[in-house]
Length: 545
Image (cartoon, rainbow, N blue to C red; front, side, top):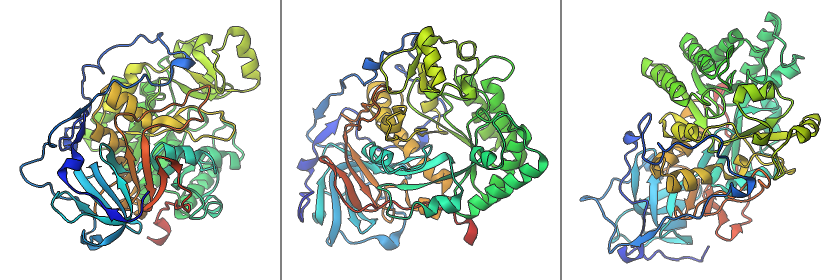
């Protein structure tokens, strides 16, 4: 950060272009399944990386300097969400971000521009090199960097005072526990007042938690009276601020298809999504991935609810990704409301005694050497497995084909969600700290699976649109336009990478240069800034509707 100074708005300051290209984005070209030369390469499922090799290889992306950025014949239209927030560029702003490649996935704007922030709001975007130089108390030189909306992690868990700092280092400005929050909404928000977290927070009512409150075991079916009580609990949680419903029938096999449809009906009634960890994650009869997808499609069709398929690369689509995506795509074409999300890793992790690990060798076609206990660098053996099982250790399973990850990221209805937040024990999957940087570094820059604007849409505007119907705060997030909230991530596309591993997930991503939350720089190239915590609860408006 610097004292107030001019931005130096000349074209000469903007000559650095990256090999990723600075052409205007067109979000409409994000196809359902986009073939790609590199993405089409097949990887043997048994060619798994060792723990030491999990860090991304050094980037081979080169930087090229051209005399001038290629500009369209006419100046691009500046994205405006709320014209009443616009301010003249000759004023003094709180923050100016100058010279960067500004990408707004909401409108497709993708251009070299200067961004001005007043308070918690984006107040001006200047694309004219001859315009007055921006003046601000803090000026961020973003030459050679990408300026995007702050990332929205749609599939996280409760902020814990620790893991959200690693989220911030991964470019995340909103931590949404749509995988279910282990408390009732009223007490959950009471324990987390605005200003208690460096990032925004909110999430979904968790059916698994409510089942426990109602004295149901994982395999217990709910009698009608108990089901009615659970549905009332779900309605109460939505009124008290949660922004969706969550179910996980794989971990609670006692949850019936009828239970799922009943909750989908409540989701439809209140205009929120039903987010589901699907019932099956293998391809052995009875009970297959595609049957799990069909169950969710049937719930969407029967109720009109928006059904969101959680981490489809590990549950619902593993090994049959093309078919699973095809069925969801056909449902969307039919008029049903569905989305999905994925995390960019070829292994999942959960506790060894969970239902997911029942008959794991036959279900997933893996053996002891494909399992690795979190926090260690060693794969299991038949002998060490017994000790890990006795301890119910969090264990990673290398059971996701690489092509499944790439294919899911290419589907236009699939977002990015981490499915984790780092705990102080560091007993976590590396997706808890490196999810978003891994997409940008490994799958955008190195593998060229998807283009940068498409990847950013999956992290910003798509989750915002999914949830904004009943969460007014999200209508100004996930966007980089005049009048939007100044939740902004500035990163270096040539270096952004994840560094976390199964053995040591507590490693911050690299290449995330600046992160602003509510207009305040919370992270700079030097680390966390010590600014007051600006995160606030993202609540539903159902109680006031």
